[in-house]
Every structure is written in C-alpha cells, then in structure tokens.
Length: 206
Image 1 (cartoon, helix red, strand yellow):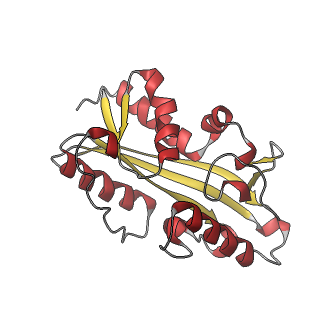
Image 2: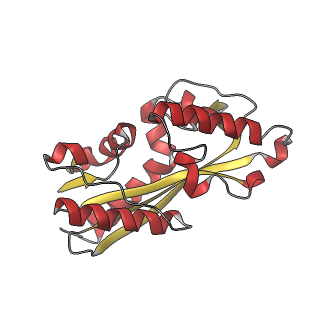
C-alpha cells in the first residue's frame, strides 16, 4: 500500500521507509507525490498524540490520499518533560534545521548544567497516526526510547538531540548507533513497527 509521510525531515522519511518498505509499503515524502506541498499547520496541542492526529488529517485532506504523520521529541524528567512537544523549535524557529538543532542542543546543555547523574533520565517519544482524506483516523501508535542526558554530545549519526541521549545499557549515545541498529530500538522504529503490525493484523486498508 502507498503511504505519504507528512514531514519535511528527510531523516524521518528514511527511518520510516527502512521499516515499512520491506513489508510491501510504498513510502513517499510530501515532495515525492508531485503535488504542491501544503503549508505546515500550527501544532497547538499539549500532547504528541494530538499533534500527530492534527497533522495527519491536515495533510491527508491537502494531498488527497492517506498520510502518516508523526509527532516526536525529547522528554527530560529534570526539566519536567521539556522540551516535549516543543522539541523542534525549543530555541526558536529561525534558520535551517541544522542551525535549529545546534541551538536546541546548546539550550539543552545549558539547562542540564549541575543536574546530578541520577536526575538525568530522559526519553525520545514518537507518536504516529494514519488518516484518510475524509478525515478518518485509521491507526495510532506510540514508541519510546529510554536513556539519560549525557555530560557531552557523542556520535555523528542521527539528528536533533541524538548525540545527547545516552543509552547506559549499550554504552553509547543514540548518535553512535548505526542506522540499522537504531531503527531496531528507537522510538520511531518502535512506533512504526507497531503501526505496521496493526495495519496488517487488523487488515486496515485505504
């Protein structure tokens, strides 16, 4: 089945495609549909689930076919769950994605100064939703990857906050995992595999 992924982040598209393509899904980004890319909607809601649902319905109506949207981010317990749903723009909306990532990571480093090791627990969260052009929500899932905020960034893979989320049981950061290993345990990998399972076993069609 064909599914359009509603994101301007090519890394997310590739991570989702890596899981779904072997299962027989044709995965396209918004730009690959050949249609004008609609403007990004505001994400006013306080939960990842609500924002993923809003984006899925918005883009499905705009492109006229089923759309998978996700909302994801970093939750840091010492920061009362921040940056949370504001992860992508925590330090402002100006500049390129790379520039925003750099500012976000600088703010994270500053916010965590002096926080002891036992209070540095955190997790990546990803929620996913598939909606139809009629506004029908077909399936929703959630995945998490637990870790701790490190004292310094490590690794060159991934994007966003990946260098800062360390995985104590593996002795590496998220950014030090090879892509195939990261997909096996990441929040996004878990959410998309659950989504694929539900689609297949509930025989959801669009």
